[in-house]
Length: 447
Image (cartoon, rainbow, N blue to C red; front, side, top):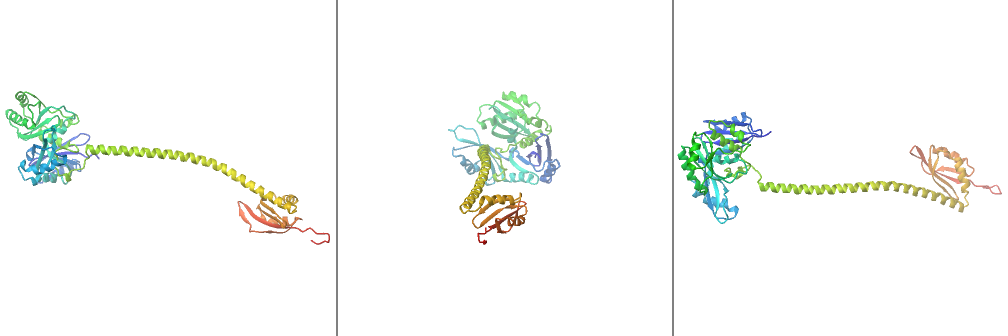
C-alpha cells in the first residue's frame, strides 16, 4: 500500500488539507469552524482512505518569528547553544517556551556567520501535534510559506527573487536566491502601491541592492501584475513550478487558492526539511546525505567482501572437486592393488604349505590332486594348510555337512571334523575342517 503525503495548513479556526499519492491524484478539503477539529480531521482523512500516512504541518507566518541573525564564527556544534543564550533578544515570548530551528545562510568566511532562525511558542507546536495524533504521524512542522520552495525545480539559477504569495487577506513575502530562502515576512495584501512599498522594505533583509524578478501566486488580485512590474521595474510572473507538481497546482480550487497551495507545498515536504519546529525527539528518522553515502559505502564494501568470500569458496569447491575426483580414481587403483596383494598372500601361503609339506615329507601333490577330485564343484577353498599331522581346509560350500563323509572316504584322511561352527555367508556356508593323515601300515601289519 502506498501511503499518502499529507499537508495541513493550520490557521486559527480552519485547517486546509491537501494530499496526494504516487499516482499524483490530488485530494483537497477544508475543516472549518469545527467543535473538535482533530476528530473532524481524522474522520475526513479516514473517509478518503488517507489515514496512517505522514502529515506535514504548517503554521501561518504570523505565528512564528523568522529572523536572520549574525553569530561569531565558532565550531558547528556551538550554534544551537549560542542561539539558546541569545533567544530572549529576538523573541516576543519567554525563551523557555520557544521551539526553534535554524539554517545557515551563505556568507564568506571572514564575515560573521549568518543563520536564519525560525521559532514559535511551544503551545502552537503541541496544538498542531494533537490535531493529527489520532490519524497520522507528524513528519514536520514548518512555517507554511517556507514550504513553497519545495514546489520549485532543482537547479534554479541564482537570481534575487521575491515570491509574493497571497492568502486570506495577507501576503507572504519570500526572498529567494535560486531556491535558497534568505528571509520571509507577512504583510497585508493591500493594493499594489502598498505591496510595492513592503517589497522595497523587505529587500534589505537579504542584503540586496536590487531584485531580479517577482513571482505572484495564491489568491488572485486582478490587475496587480502589470502595476507591480512597472513600479519595481522587474519582470513579474507566476512561479516556475517543477513539472512533477505543475498538474497538482493546476488541480487546486480557485477559491482560496492561496491556502490550498500552502497545503500542497507542505505535502511535498522532503524527508529532512529545513526550519523544522518539531522537537528533535518527535521527528521521524530520515537519513541525511552523509549517512546515505556512508551506508552506500558500507554496502559496497560488504558486497565486495562477500564477492571475495564467494570467489574463495568457489575456488575451494573446485579444488576439492578435483581432489575428490583424483581420490576416486586412485581408490579404484588402490582396490586393484589390494586385490593383487591378497592374491599374492594366498599364493604365498599355498607355496609355504607346499614347501612345508615337501620338507616334512607330506604327500602334498598327491593329496592336492585327490582333494581336487574329491571335493564337489561348488566348494571354494580360501586356505589349505598341510603339516605332518594332517590337513586343515577353510572355505565355502553349498552344504558344508556333505564334505565330512566325502573326506572320510579318502584313503589318505581320517578323523575328519569341523574345528569351528559353520556360518552362513553370501548364500554359502563358511567352514573350517581338520583331518589327520591316515597311518600307513608297516611290514608287521601295525599302523
